[in-house]
Image 1 (cartoon, helix red, strand yellow):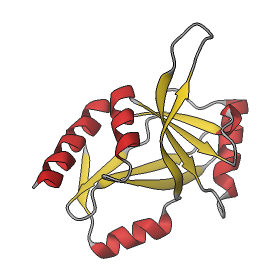
Image 2: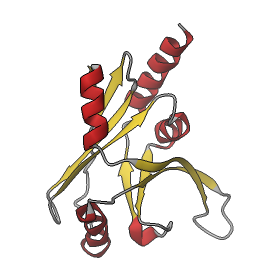
Image 3: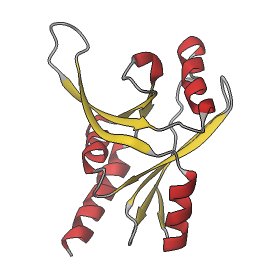
Image 4: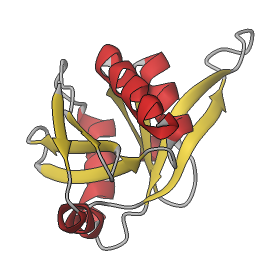
Length: 155
């Protein structure tokens, strides 16, 4: 697990350099007509100024992503608790970006990510699967951090 405590200056720098999330929460999805709805952790990204990210997701839908890729999270505590998602992929095209989820503001999305082991990133103005990218999450690491964040918020 990667853990780091960010200073005020580092947190401000993160906020300047990360792609902002327009929405962090959940979405109900049905995989088959007869299956029950499931909650999926969802991040809708504001890619204004980063057309390469939207284009990267478009390319993924035509060429696919090599299997076994799991972008690392860097977890933070102290005055700036949260999870920094670092996506840095070189195939099928090169694309790198960061998203910072804060605790407790993004609690719903973080808890659903831990429970499901997945995260769905959307770009664009509509929730269309052609504008989405799914990521796997190391559940035990995230559960561990959630317990730490919850303990510190009670102190």
